Length: 127
Image (tube, rainbow, N blue to C red; front, top):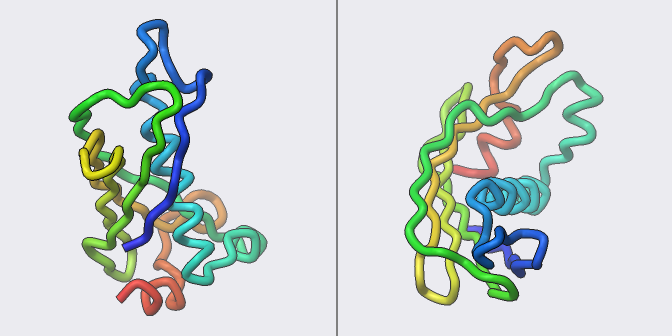
């Protein structure tokens, strides 16, 4: 499991002082980028080779609000890896309290936006 810390800034909140719902997607995106870097995948080199990651599907549940200045943690766990897709479980927590959960399906796109196989190094790194 990969963990990524997030602090809630004023700009993340709405008029009620709680985190605007779309910002959870930004939080989990940052955590995925950090996780990919940590397992040794160079996304700049991938892009230079004509490959990019794309989110294919997100299924999300908002469980409880986060507020300004909260310290959160995003936990990322691999659920499934196939030749063409990666399915991740991502949870945003405040301490042990689960605030947001998402199951995210990632695919790899080649030049022109056509689906292609995930890089072999990535598949080996997450098994």
